[in-house]
Image 1 (spheres, rainbow, N blue to C red):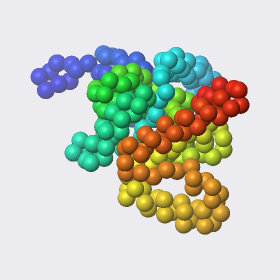
Image 2: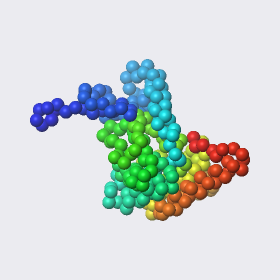
Image 3: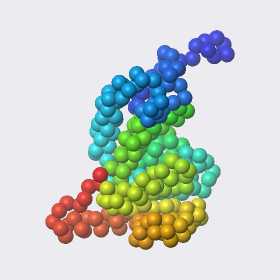
Image 4: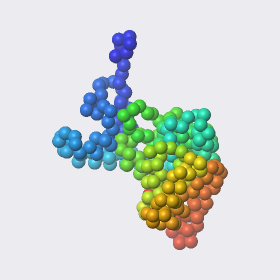
Length: 268
């Protein structure tokens, strides 16, 4: 109830669908679809519901593939939702999004605020394709206003598949746990050749210095990764350099495809 006694319409989401009115399910308040799927301690009735979730998961893949299949070449840009508009990295995100759009790439982000919004804004203002892949969360978060093409997912793993399948590169602006998750998944997929090799670019050398020192000084020194794995990461503070690395990698893949007589490899 509002202060004047009128009833406010409750807003809730079902994947990409937004609903108004009705009462929320008290069993689902404060949880996410992923949490309910992965929680083995829940009531036994969920045991019988889990097989049917496969159809919902399948539907999310179909929706994502159908929406994104006609995208031009794209770059996924990650970064913190907490980056403020007056932060230098927000300005860098806008510049990056614009430069990628001008180079002919669609820009894919998580569709949220902060660094994601910045990259979407830059792409949109430059006349490029601005894509947002949102996620259902317990707290309210809608796709930012600069997204041209957007979809909200229930499941993180479906969303992450879309980030990888349709990207020719990853650019990672400063961020937290979610950004690190996306960074290391990209590195792992490239390292294990689960995807065609593509650039993984860390933007902001000072911000990433501690992480890189740990990778070089701990992981590599203890032989937990191969020395050549360090070559999977590019670090830069320059938007033009980031775009150049991406374009050169694209050109190299195309040349390799022409020399072999086969079409250039398709991501995913």
